[in-house]
Image (cartoon, rainbow, N blue to C red):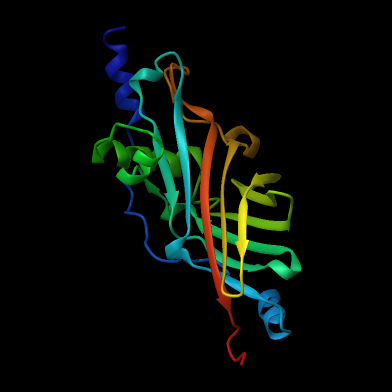
Length: 228
């Protein structure tokens, strides 16, 4: 057991460091879908996501018999992109997995996590997350299609890891002529999307299946190119 504990800790933080996450709006996404251009040209109110003002933060909790030896993490996207047309009852949003950040100090504090992992542990966590867990090379983008707003919730088709699930996400939505702001917190299970939570030592040290997702989406009134 004395030799097992440091081995588990080493495995839990191992992984080749990847390139630092990109900043700014995500690349590789359809930034100007034709349907929203058409809607805006016909006079519908269309809003474009403000990536710099929007945030998706996912809190990842530890699990397993040796959970106390592991770390809890916050993974975040600052590069959400997409469009919303509230009058048409829909929105399409997406972000790239390779642009995710891990364990920003202020987000850890917001999640009630007191410890700050070392830079080496953060790099290892990000490598494991994008590699064997999320398979980001094969499934680089997470997309969200809001099918219609409900009563205190957004009915959203979430596509992650090649799997689409329709979910009711709790939300407070405020809309005016210039801006849309949507805030909420939801709980998702990795296994619902075909993801096997990371673990070592036959599950003695593991990542919990359930994720807490906190989001704030800000979108601003948009005009299609050439629209008066």
